[in-house]
Image (cartoon, rainbow, N blue to C red):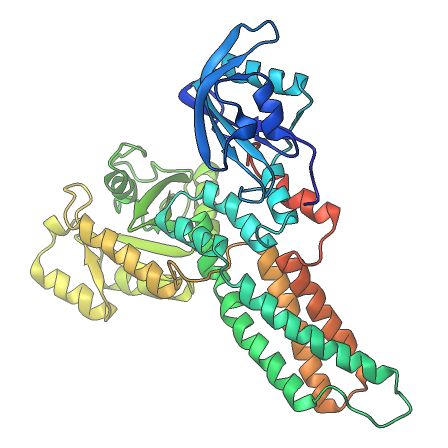
Length: 458
């Protein structure tokens, strides 16, 4: 174990609650807690046992009745001796206990320091460590499962094994440099080629999954666009079941972007209501329309909403051209179906020659079907692989891409018959990226940057 200084922090959310948990980790964590714990002698208790007692001030007055759970190294989260103190969730009580621990020589933990110690002590690799923060921050079924997959090893264990094989080949290539004047080849080139191709076959699906991973982690940016009075704000309110946006018969009521979140089948949708698409009548409306166009450019999914009862065949043809030329995944949604006759509906469907989702936002007709269509479209177009290894972290994506580019150069070098020193250079770059990805190569600055984003107590 690399760290032994005892540290402590509140492991549950700050604020008043029924219970709070304070975590203590490091050498003598059990003995230090035992100094002001009255109950069983914690130093004599086996790992993974919980004990009721009281915590005392230096004058032996009671701070609180608590439950102290003992975890002995290496069978703990940090692989150090750990005590978790469950007390009543009073901010005053928590403060008193932490002050007592500090008085006994315990240091208050930095953000993410418990997880950092777990990583440094070999509990898991860096990708898994980062998954701890993602798991805590998960707010949907998809993000929860993606983080859980990473926490259990995800793709990192496979990359660690492949990296070791590549290290063995690089060692042989560099050995050839010691025999530069002799025609020797320790690293069989065909085997090296097959290994690099195998690694790239693992890398490519992971790199391509980043688009889906971004959807999982940040939600699906879903923009509702259409002409003024098409019912965009009414649809937003209906999907959210609340009066989020102002609804009016006056065209151009919505002049700014309105956003909220909706969860469908474990996927978080960031719904964005926008100003109506038309020629602006004043500067403020022009700004709103420009923001609408920008949101369309940034969107992962577009809902094109139109007034089915009022739109003409020519207007519909123009609208289809615009939404298709945007290049974004989209759903065509015809609103006010309650005011639409069958002949008009058939005409619009024929012109579109693709599925139109017919709804009445005001009457909340067919909204369940629209929600299902949103879920299906995201799962198909964004390839949301719930439960599979999906890259959700920009740092991971950058290192995966860097590894792939280095291997591509090395393969091109093989084809060109480059000397071992040039080949070794690209292979070392690939190893550097893989090592930094999984944490086999780290710097203090890198670790501080990663773990400083964690909450205190984790």
